[in-house]
Length: 150
Length: 267
Length: 86
Length: 119
Image (cartoon, rainbow over all chains, first blue to last red):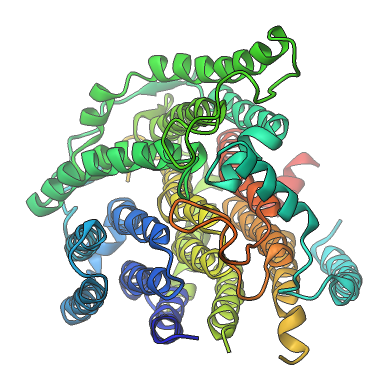
């Protein structure tokens, strides 16, 4: 096993493990935050795995997750907005920590692949992932305040 | 059957099933073994037909008939949903109020929407080369369209999504798959045989003969099917309301017990 | 050994599936199901099936939760048409 | 390698399937039951892909590797699982549509109350 896979394994065991624990127990505000952060734990580990298996085509998975993960969180933010308005989640620190994790992973991988098309793709994924998570986190803590009938 | 008897039945049959399944698992070829006769033959056949992604080759060439079956299940499921979720006689449509969405969320949705649709199309187009294909890309493109509902509001989605058109496109895609299959018969070979088109250069977009065409047909079918499905569900959840404003008691009780249930879970 | 990542993802799948069944409220179950989709996608990737992983990501991360949440909303909204729904 | 990793994936598939069945049988809400069915479905994918895995192999996708340069996993089972994931989602949608009809007709989504209604 090479270092990339080891890093991915650790990230999965800690990050995804924590997300699973957070999403299946506790009050609703904690669950939605854990659901949002599961994307930011899994997406970097997919990138690391693609590097570890030496298969650039596996990066497509991370790209799709960076696109659709925050969409999934927006679904919950929108359709649970009633319950979340009464008890809004506050996870500013965790969100930025997750964003930092994504940024560090992307930068390290960029340094590993060198300037090429693959690096551009990595940067796009990083931007989508971090932007998506920050926006989804904001949406959870009151982005859909006015939604009632729609 | 009472709840108690049912639980007993589940426990007994579940234990039996578990024992049988575990016994079967112990006899399966060990995980990670190196004997995969079908896999090796499939890879060889895919390479002979210049298809870089063997899984796409299995789906749209070697086992294209199986995919036809899957596609008909998908089509039938969508048809069933459309019939089940149509507007009943005692229901009326209410205009949903426009939503107030936070500005960053709205901007994010409007920026990511085209990116995600293009991403979906990319996944469809490169199906026979890299991981992906019509099934995955179709779902991505269709889901991306609904960012308009999540980020803006329902009416914006309705304006860009003529459901009737998508229903027609869905059926057209199914027919396209069948016509491509029949073309093989007309050309003197077999149904869905990949012999019509040149196989092309390995690892380019036009390689693999029939595979890119069937892949595109499936992509269109899945995308349209998901849009139609979600349109019906959104109709039910957002627009259609019970006509006679009557509040029956059972329903209220049910809702309250559900709420309590949720609180217990949440605590 | 190269299998640690497989074992970790298998255990994650088992735990998440159990949690998805144990959460009896459909909205909370939908949250767990969306994480289950992600974890399954990781498992499929480490089993070297990126195509299936993509499929699972596309379906599990947004489509299934959206369907379930829309059904939940519809079922909850029944019988209270006057106050503009929930 | 010890004996446990040789059967662990199969056992996980069995566990996921049985847990899903248990949830289906004891569910008090039809929407929850549909979710449990989705869990059962995912057990089949785990089983199929576990059967097709080979140690140290990679996916038979040749856009970024040379054919024949590395050992490959079985693509046939992957193709089976891949189509079923998407088709399974639409079948889930069909079941949810049935649940919505039940809730409209009978005003409840609890299977126990429904059997009382029938008589």
